[in-house]
Amino acid sequence: MQSLDIHNPGMPDLQFVLFVSALCTSNLQTINVPDELRRTIFDRCWAFLHTEPPPTDPKERVLDLRGGTELTLEACAATIRSLLTEAGITTLTWDHPVSEPTQESTPAAQPLIERLGQLYPDDPDIVDPRSGPPTGSA
Image (cartoon, rainbow, N blue to C red; front, top):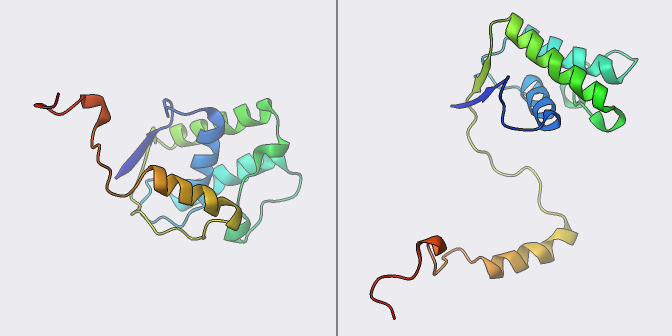
């Protein structure tokens, strides 16, 4: 079970807003935020960025904060915290198993991936480089 303290998330506001909005628009069944509150959080943050109503298609319900300002970001973060606190939720909790990647790497990234694979093979000889040399070695 994963969790996020909404008042001390341990991440910058931008990451917090994007993360919480993604949780709110996901189809997670195990999150401790009711569906109506999830919709309200997204819709209010959407209203800070757009004049048109929020999309109804779940695939289009994504916040793009690139057109916003620092004030927009602060308003979104404050709104999220306020709405959750009013509902008695100070820690978000959810369960989501790790899933397979949904996209292949781009062709441009493939050479870098291959080089990293050579630098960091699957079976490294050094298990913990910070522990120093093995005992009994010269």
